[in-house]
Length: 284
Image (tube, rainbow, N blue to C red; front, side, top):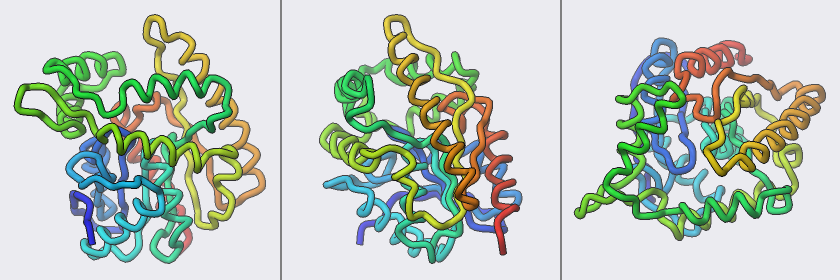
């Protein structure tokens, strides 16, 4: 049995399990977790190949769900509300699907993906492949901190989370995570899961779900204006699908938060408040 790296933030009350996004780590949850422990027991987990967790190959959702379940068993967590950001949001929904007896509910914070046939997906895929698992230069962390300032993320938080999400190498460079082979398997798995779109993906999940979209788009970098257009078009499509779903599926709640995709780093207080309110409203 291979366990994932986890951090128990403590607290008392309903159990929460927090999952981070692609290329990130459980440290992204530090600020929100500090607030959530006032009314919950909070545990965060590094996904396979991320942070301090061991790698996984092939990187598939069922295998990831099994490793999370084993890790929660080791920490004495038989049931929890699973909360995930981005990739973690996808995994949270899949965890709820795989074993409703272990998940009381799930929260997906802006965790969506586009199928290979989505207009512009090929161009986005090329960019993701180019940056997957690279060896980054010594100034990598400083660049991350500088970029985070554009979103109002405090420098201390930006540096701590950037360091937790990469591995320092002896020559001063940084191994970004997950490493390349694992990242490519991860992308293939997301393409498989979302091949038919968001609505078919959510079929068969009967537990309460809170699905949250970012209220603001990431600003486009110079020369990458096309990606802003792609993201806005995709977000509009997801919004339409979720509106239709929430009108016919009483177990699905949809909300929006005034932040970009980096919401748990930008506005940890708002994220914590949204999660806490959802948990308070759960039956039982």
